[in-house]
Length: 337
Ligand code: DAH
Image (tube, rainbow, N blue to C red; front, side, top):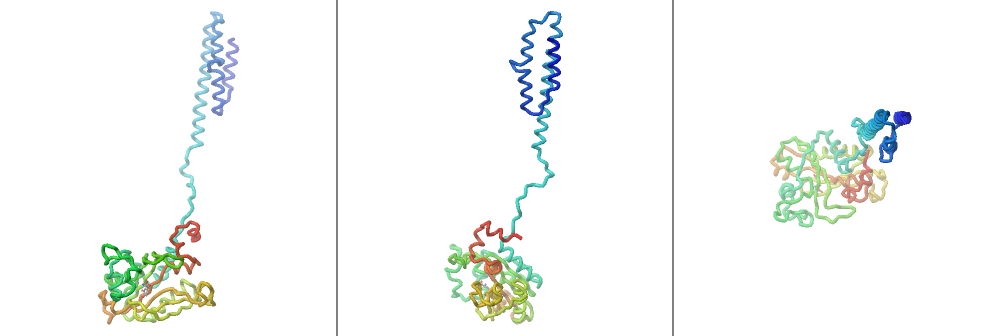
């Protein structure tokens, strides 16, 4: 019997535990109610009295061996499990993919960077404006149709407060604070009470330009806009100025650029004219200068304003203005670069 226990101790020593399952096998085989140790104990009665002491000791050491072995294995297995699940904080994190700028932001930034080479800086106007800065100071006659309730979102409780219909009010705010020379751009969001369609929206963006100094002439305006058109639409671009009317400029003009899609030959984008209408401009009206405390005898200047959505539509071949406001990921991810 004693020999058998010795063999069992050896068996336990040799037993290899590398999984939870075979640790459990060992436990069941030796320590369970019907296991080997319980069985050997039950034979204790049959052992001769002289051998009882040694027999007992041997059983105890067998039991101890199994328990030790299991405890050690348990520790090793836990360590292994821990290692497998440890987070290595030095590893690079999961890749979330880079976002991109909105096409309206991209076009705005590009226009700003072109004019900044000529010394233009950026000023912020305000989206909630008063009638004075949006209309009166810009020489809009009291009965001008642009003030009509259909075009302008007025604040109901105070008809003097409105959502700006253009960024031109930013000119006034700059001239009120700053003395010439002034070279400034006012980009921003504007609002008009118009039906939403593929070609127009009630919210859109504009960028306003203003240049005031001594002896600024229409030739300066034309040259500045030509430089812009070539930088933005391409070296071969030609420009054309058509007479127009804006209350805050005199003379006023609208600028067309030769169609960048067909190169001026005529296509669906330019409606077969070879020209694209891109901005309004003119020499700042003396009344506007006066309203802002600038002497029109001493100073003159030009202003221009363009719609960012329209510019972006031409640049990227977008045919529906609503796409810029839908936050459609498929559309926006086209503008990654
Ligand atoms: N504010 C005009 C508009 O919303 C655009 C414009 C035209 C701005 C002529 C100007 C300008 O500064 O000189 O249609």
